[in-house]
Length: 358
Ligand SMILES: Nc1ncnc2c1ncn2[C@@H]1O[C@H](COP(=O)(O)OP(=O)(O)OP(=O)(O)O)[C@@H](O)[C@H]1O
Ligand SMILES: [Mg+2]
Image (cartoon, rainbow, N blue to C red; front, top):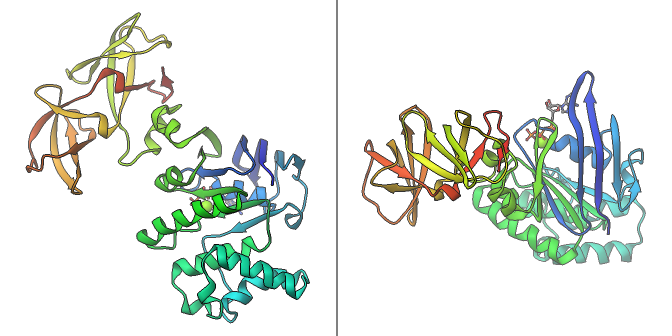
């Protein structure tokens, strides 16, 4: 089993640099997820680890071995793509056996490995079927089976579930978690879906514009984002941001006033030199906001009613969007003006440039 370590990895297509010096480590046996918006370079980075794209700069190590210049087949990795591209004329068994046969594996070895993969993926009842006779989830399991039979040290997944419907995606996520526990291999999974990242990852790596923004355990990123981008990207519904001005800073923190003439909050802040008059951006999680007698005035525009919980989509006096989570209480509030507030200790503070102030 091998971990994966990237050091100052860069990739340019012509004059366009799309990976700009990424250093990170996915420890052996762990489930790492690369997440970020479309075009941030997730697939490119994964393909570089697989050796399907060459590297413009930096080094890639797998299991402590520098593989930057090693050909794909010799890296001990297997990749599963979004489009599972099974051979339509071969049945499930033969699809999984294909790469082993190509490598001239003995018949008994092929049999053993395919049976094992099929057992792990619960495909035993489908081995004789053609891909066209399978559901999307079953097809994706066959694609994963093709990777498993090769017994790679590292599994690389590029958005393998995005072709599946929502319910099946949830089910396949559980399957992948189970698979990871069962075979214990290092896995790197790429997605633009932060919910998928949160539910699958041991460690999440947030990418933007070819740079690593932050890495850490899912809840660590949720609770303690390094910048506004990570705060806004991780969490659903997303973190709210409102502009504010610092009135004063003292030993305990800062006193801020939300624009324009909004409520004041005292927010604990240990470091960060933000003097009186400084402009800041407050980060407010929907579940940390509550309706109150006074606070920030907002107009409720729409209520997303999910049963146990509802989300009030509202607008502030300055025109910003604000989502408030509400549990219990189902009276309609559309168009109403209400006040929302939060505990100062639940508010995160960012500079206007998006850096986190702690
Ligand atoms: N072969 C290529 N030639 C030129 N530019 C490329 C090539 N492959 C990718 N790019 C560019 O590199 C950037 C990163 O692409 P990449 O496919 O890695 O993004 P991604 O994060 O996987 O996005 P998505 O979530 O949409 O799959 C994009 O701007 C893309 O246009
Ligand atoms: Mg991609």
